[in-house]
Length: 136
Image (tube, rainbow, N blue to C red):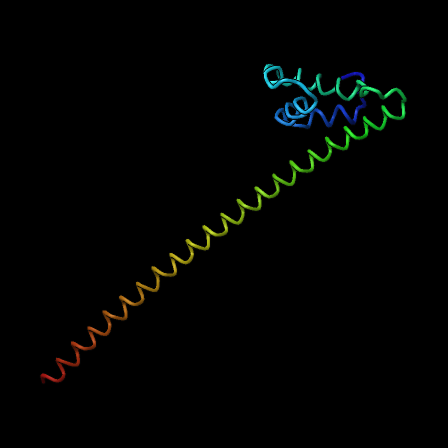
């Protein structure tokens, strides 16, 4: 990790282990080898990918371009992770809002049924009073 920039190091540290594994597999590592690595080993392996120039890349400009592309890919991955987290948060908020609305509707329905029962009891009592008055 000493052979890469501070920015690249920070990006690697913020990237999830699953994403690091996926990057190594895309770089040609076998899934068994990648699965055997712990987090520190994953970060070191990714740092080596950043530090080692691509085959045929002999010029420093090409190395810098490759490093910039790798950094850009890492930033895009981080952005996608944030977008996913935001979408999950929005989904949870909508679900909570829906549950709150359903609860409020249920409470309103129960209150309406209670009002109807009270009105029914009042009508029955009024009918009894009328019947008693008519009997007199």
